[in-house]
Image 1 (cartoon, helix red, strand yellow):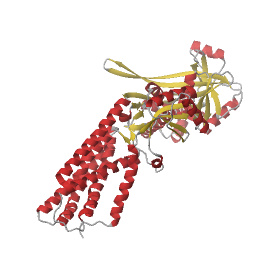
Image 2: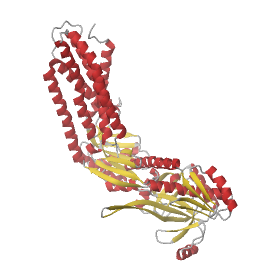
Image 3: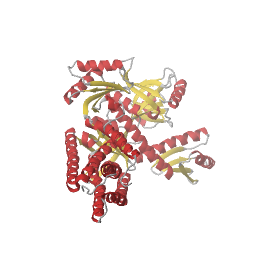
Image 4: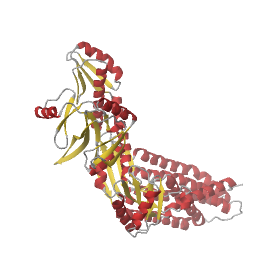
Length: 616
């Protein structure tokens, strides 16, 4: 029989609409002003929760609810004024070891949260916050790799007892000088087998081997530097306590960082862009020799001259014991002996072994800690923009080794705020290469609120105009299309919520466009039905032919639009991707509701009935 669906199709449609309604529902409950509390080094427990609640109640602030999950405490309030007062009270009561972050927590009921139903995130342009576009210094990344290989080559030649005159690096690559031809020939045989990332060229006239990185090694290092920086930036943002950040790659050397709701933009820039790390080296010679080296400018072969913060010179070994890369945890603390700020360090197994061996063999000898910071300064003179890379190295601590230690120790010689910042940077990891903030945009929360209202109104107005047009022009069939259009909007929101997508203004534009496009399929079907009636076919046959014959046209139109949306998502960045995602989802759901949904309602209304006239 014409225009009849089997029972399973009706059940499938009902199940889809039921679950779509459930998972779209959280978006109707709005958000609560909240304060998120976490500890820098440990997970919060019930005792911490009681202390936080007590500190807030002492200010006479009413708490709506509290949630302790994943080591973090979330306190909800009725309004933003109470939220701000509570945050300030907690900063004063809890001290620097706790991270206090303002947040907007979804007000989803418990029964929906039990089903893992959550609302969509709101993007930077809707919630407010700060947007950074950061460029990774790939030249510094390659230089860092070459310097690492330079040290490895020096160590390898020493281990293999191949005599060499010196090893140096310049803009043309690495250069190894020899005194005798036999040693050069021996090294030329061994080095290519040991260092596959380098291309070696021998010059027997000057007794020099030159080495440069091959293309594959350069490509891998750039990719690795970008990925490592993204991971490090994500760790640092987590330390800042920002909820729902966006950190993603843009192009081959840039990173987008969006921090919704952030208030201290200066502090965020300082933490995100910092490239501080540490090096531990043994001191060489006596203090008299350090002063003499500073006066004459002549240093021993295996030493480098550095300066402490008070200006005193110090000679340190060229050999690095460990670097910041081998630090797995760091915490700001107080030195128990003199009460000065300190940073407690914990090393990984490799670093612990090196530190254990070094301290065991050098008890009674001094060891220095070098604080290294890389910066990129941009200067504009007229229309010319120049970038200067500067590296600051200073000795923050020289202490005599009193006993063997390995994976745990502490360093001193820092100011209080400096110790906290250094601990954060070491805990989150050091950047593989310096980054420069080349673009910064700040969006205020009032602008975000205005954007939300205008975006919501654009969807409502467009939706209502389509509903009115369909009801007036296609009568009963238009009302059926309106039901399907409403179901389509619900399914889109449900899918975005399930994916925990971030809704932005371009995303709203994609939804508005989808609302207009979703009705196209019904227009094609209804016009085809009207044409079949004009040709003298019965109402039942006209309905059947309308859906069957319009299907190929609908598929062609939607598939071509879907391909365009996929291209936008693949090649686009940021806002373009947001628009493409909502458009893709809208196209797929609109085909389901326009073809399956309306056909089900039409079959229920007109199928298996003797009808003479259609309301179309």
